[in-house]
Image (cartoon, rainbow, N blue to C red; front, side):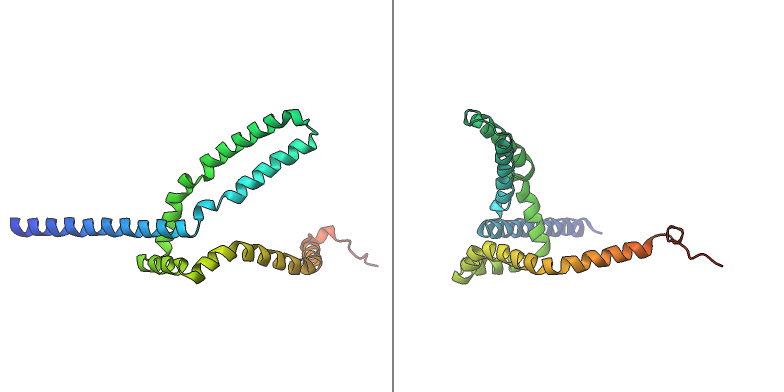
Length: 173
């Protein structure tokens, strides 16, 4: 390859890699915009609330006096700090951006952003948590009717899997 061709190839490569980096940055920025619209930074809020409730329940079970309420609050704050280290938005965000950029093209993210900025998209974001919770409750209620049958099937299978020697054998005359 001549020096000029080598130089041209290097310039083309540099331009192409610069474009790839710009595209990746743009793609990541779109993922961040979508995650912000979708309130993904609030995904861990139920976890925090559940942990706070666990501490409050333990405090109540211990029949701790109201004078010890500061101790409860201190431990709840320590638990929040621990959760922040594991699932704080600053910890989740990079992985969430990667998750969305690997599953949605940049154009798809732009389309999602446009949808969630629309009146219907805003309504979906507003209603989805309650709909998801209600759907889970409906499913759980329906599932409870199947539990006895599934448990019986599980017991039947377990009985059939018992080794032959464990089963009483009929005596031969």
